[in-house]
Amino acid sequence: MRAPDSLKYMPQLDALRALAVLAVMVHHFLPVDRFLPVDYITLGLLAVRLFFVLSGFLITGILLSYRSEERGTALRRFYLRRILRIFPIYYLTLFIALALQVRPIQQGAFWHLTYLSNYVAVSHPEWMGPASHFWTLAVEEQFYFVWPFIMLFVPRKYLTRTIVSTIALAVLFRAFVLFVLSTSIDAAGLFTFATLDSLGGGALLALFHYDERLRPRLQRLMRLFLISGLLIVTLTTGMYVFKHGYRILHTLLCLGVSLLFVVLIEKTARGFTGKAKTVMENPAVLYVGKISYGLYVYHNFMLAIVIYLLLKWTAAPDYRLVAILATVTTFAAAIVSWHLIERPIAQLKNRFTFSASQTMPSRHSTERGSAGSISSGERVG
Image (cartoon, rainbow, N blue to C red; front, side, top):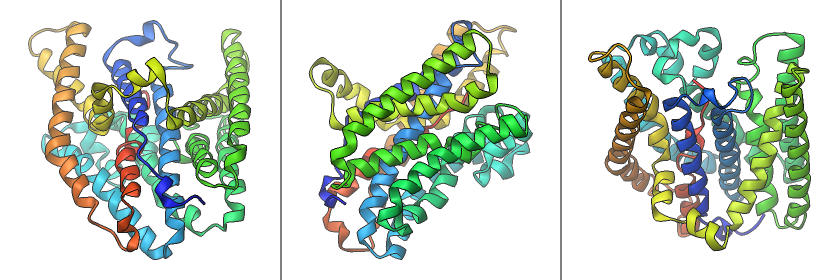
């Protein structure tokens, strides 16, 4: 593996977070289903898959850098830092909703509190309510539970085939659910196994990015991913247009999208130049990326509050007014959350080191850059 000092903060990745979380808000706040088919490629699908690929890349990069340490120490440090980053505002939001007796949250409380929302979203979607987007946080927490052990304990020579196997597993899982069980597309998309092509794609990118032996083959891998992704998306689009091969379409679609996002993230990690660099490193854009976790966690709850209050004044609130108020309140909540809760805790978590690695500030920069990336996934709620 490369030396740990190669794990540097990549600011343009924050711009991708900003883009993804804004797509989530547009998807939920505006009637975009008038223009985009709800049963094919939506802003929600694109956002969730971008976040998953980005998460797989950043978290795997961190874990690969931990392989030089004692395994128990690495695991303790990883989990403590993740808990301090993710849990505070997630549980704060849930506890406030429970205190206010929000019925759907009460009904699904056990599932939300234990990060199993993706399972209840399939069996009892009515229990999701304003937490309908929490299924992705559940997926990612379940990913955290297992992935560190794989990345830290699997012998180096088997890492590539292990990650490739996880990507294949996602496709096989969706095929099994759709062709053998013949159940709904939700069941084929919400469970953690179904997301491993995105998470695994990002992980494979991290492995080739940080392993000096594999890095010379990275651009060839990106060409393969680009061509494969374009072919798959073209194929699934044809199936959708001609209304043929529904199960094949939903077995392959997320794989194609994920492969394309791997290529995008690889380019972004290297850094765009020229006018694109100006946009990608605009301070306002980067700030939105930094507070993206809060924007994601709060946005559906702010939408529910806005609609609840407006319904006291009118039977049919104008969707434009709803969107404006929901956006303003979401940003207000996320900004306050970032400065009063998340950033202070982020500074606190950087004190928790269990080895001599505390002399490697660049690693902390990487984790600072990845904060919120896994937690900002989205699904159409």
